[in-house]
Length: 146
Image (cartoon, rainbow, N blue to C red; front, top):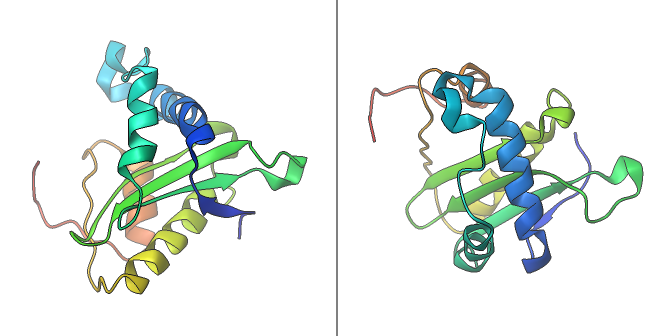
């Protein structure tokens, strides 16, 4: 299991954006040029944190191994009322260390605590790493397209 998972705070917003950008650059190469540049301006990350106040949930994984309590290395967002899970991203330097699984476990716990019994998510059909993680966690493809 990976280190500390906690609720995101305002000071995490730009760090979340940096994790997203790094993960997209490495993992979404199927998008070509779109994946090479930041997709969202800084104020969108600030808005994300604000929009995920309860009942929504925004969790971050912190790199405790290097005694850096503010070093965000992963993020997950969920809307328990709708049962939607999204924005699971892990910085590529921390991939394969259980960060994504720890974030998923924490998100599932938050959703259960809110009374949610089923969850769904969307991911690109070419996002092989994400599909592997989600399927290992029990998610199944249903053919839905968004």
